[in-house]
Image (cartoon, rainbow, N blue to C red):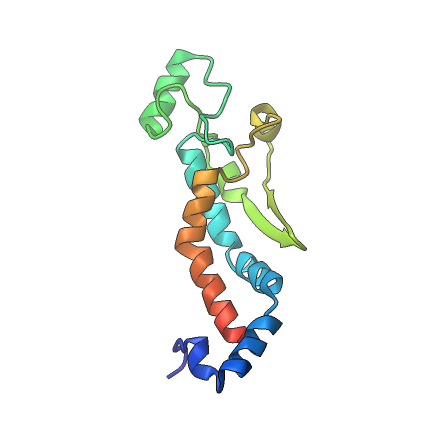
Length: 156
């Protein structure tokens, strides 16, 4: 059957053969491939983080909404960030435009920022368009770990 997972140690003949194959494994290459295959998941996680109103520092996006009436309206549309805390979504165009790419060893987020949100909400310590520590941990737990194991197993 196609797509079956065979642990690498069952593909090895001897212990010394197994050690040689493990030593030849290019961990960096496997990591980059795993990241490249999960760029859509990165963008999805970034959208979820924004829906919760959180920046890359794990704190609520700032500045909060200036007008209380608008804050209430937005809270009715999405209560996850809490009253007054922005989620940077009104039409969905900015959220839908978020993409991630892996270029060499760098992970880059891109978006069609026609409203100037990146400049308004990015500080020296935080960006709404980068993943927070908690969302990175979720990404690793739910997608990257599995992808890395599969790719490493294919290379061994």
